[in-house]
Amino acid sequence: MEQEHNPKQTGTISKIEVQKKNKQRYNIYIDGDYAFAVHEDILISQRLQKGKEITASELDVITAEEQYKKAERAAYHYLSYRPRTRKEIKDSLLRKDVEAGIVEQILDKLETEGYINDLDFALRWVSERIQLKLKGPLVLKEELRQKGISSRDIAEALGQLEYEEQVDACMRLAEKKWDQVKKRYTEKREQKHKLMMYLQRRGFSFEVIQPVIQRLEES
Image (tube, rainbow, N blue to C red; front, side, top):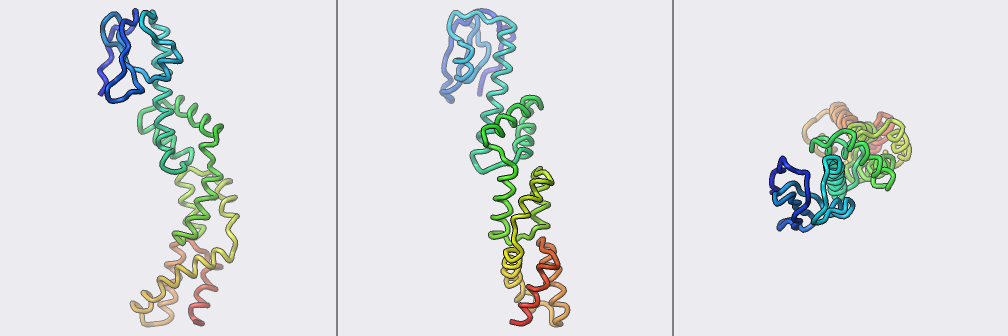
């Protein structure tokens, strides 16, 4: 845990020491007293060294850069697990009490670098979820909406789904559910109705469900 900032943070740097638990962070001492801690990136960019005079304006710059770099590292760490949408990263940073202005700067940078691409995210999401999770377009649309994907990108991603691809996923899902429905309900009409309701809740349209149920009945 870092020490609390010393109220007296301006003056001459008397000592710089690397932290024991984080070799990339340095404790800065002003006139013999601990003043603040910075990442090595700021140590280099601001040319902090023993004997350097720190003015109030320079301290403001150091503090702002430290806040930005800390938030930026948090964003890269959050992205390291899996791709994220712009909204997911924004929400994550805001939960860490990062200033809204800094958040937007980081998001714009990540988009420029290609780390954020909501359309690519939506395309992958739709392709993977319909194949692996057997979820239909209506459910996928809501999932993407909750992740902050724009209506235009959602429409483009869902537009990649071929009709036969939807029927295939719906059929696989129906086959898994069909035996359960037949065991629980005896009347064929009720079996058909319950299966249809289930497939609709999973996001498939009537145009996709109808031929699936017909094939099941024929088989």
